[in-house]
Image (cartoon, rainbow, N blue to C red; front, side, top):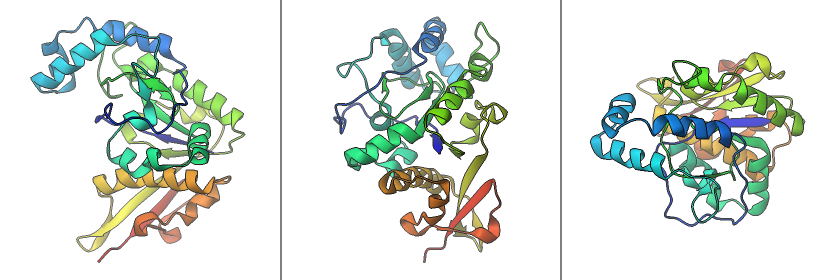
Length: 257
């Protein structure tokens, strides 16, 4: 199987990576086209386009100016260690043994507005470009049009290389919209994480994001060879709920307290 994750807005370029191993993003020529487009924007235009504060807009204006391949460990960091949001706190890739990192590299992919599709050990320089950003470009009105079928084509190749029979969608709706499931040639399973709150089970965004990372970590730790192994996921008291699930939507629930 291949699992797909969303990236994170929050980045960590201060903590040293847990491994010296790295790979290069495979769609850098496409990323360079987006950077060229972004460099034409003023900080004020970036603030308006991305709904950012003036300081954040200025920071990302500088990041676009500084972005420059080739990526090396001196000027970039592996994606799994550079992203630092809720999903990546759950994943905690830095605490995985080498065998677990190898599993992540083979079976996990990270969707990206700038890079299209990243492997966990792909180097990346700091950036901010959410997939839903309506950045007009030479191909159309937004990033979904820009990437077209390129992300799905690369995912299809990765599925074939891994001899994977299924894609597990642990990404957000915003990011998974960049994937064209009909091109993949395999079924898609979407885990859903619910917590008991207010007298019923519901999706709580913070907990659900963390659980996506926890599930990817669980799969790496046990070296999951088959998607059915994910039904045994039990991190932080979640449990598979067959009564609420179907073939494409696997629900995991917890009731704490």
